[in-house]
Length: 127
Image (tube, rainbow, N blue to C red; front, side, top):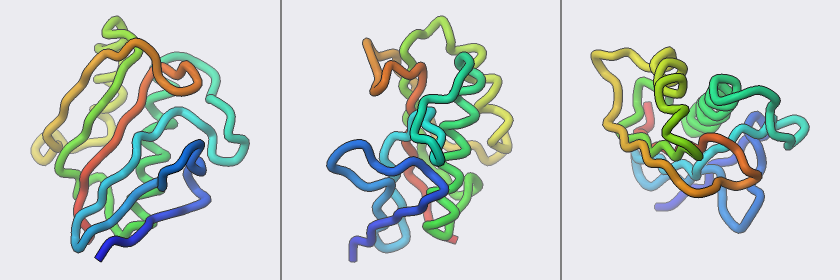
């Protein structure tokens, strides 16, 4: 059975989608961008600050779905520029245990919503 996941601790959807959907024991998040959930404005700063906001948004969605970063199976990461890859990677690394880190794809795209520098979506399982 499909269950919609929603929390006010992450930005509300800016289009016709939900923050996440659970199906049985799996959680599929929508891509999170660097929006402050309180103001719905893009956070100030560069790739490091935006990556932190994106991962904190994902953390809030996963917690609402009874999950955590330890339960992420796969991440898909979108960067506005591969020039930001090293700094993105260093910030992303702080959120994962290297021994249990998820599979990951990282791609550069032409533009992202609201002209942010990074967007990340995940597939995880419930606790």
